[in-house]
Length: 125
Image 1 (cartoon, rainbow, N blue to C red):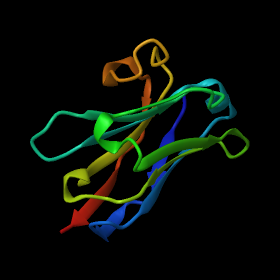
Image 2 (cartoon, rainbow, N blue to C red):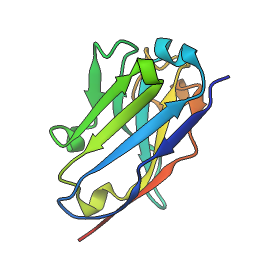
Image 3 (cartoon, one colour):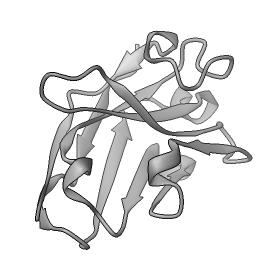
Image 4 (tube, rainbow, N blue to C red):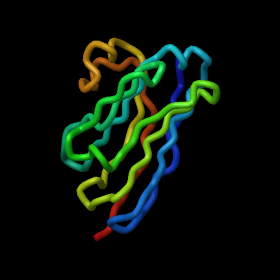
């Protein structure tokens, strides 16, 4: 069992930046692919970004390409989502996820075995 804890959310003006962190409870985190998802009120959970266990490959939602960067530090059992040039439409609860069969279907939420509790990101216009 792996526990994931997100942090770093908050309120920011449009054009601002935030860095989300996802801390894992176990060393086995280093072997898991990681993903970030978000869910706005009344909407389905949406894929945002993905990174393989060794950071060799990354994938992004088209609307965040060039603005968001996913990374990980396996020595710290932590993954990150750097979010720049934030827009009001980025407002959502952001979740990190790991494991499962995510390597096969990285954009599919149901492919992940472990989830964090989420952190709120609010971007004001």
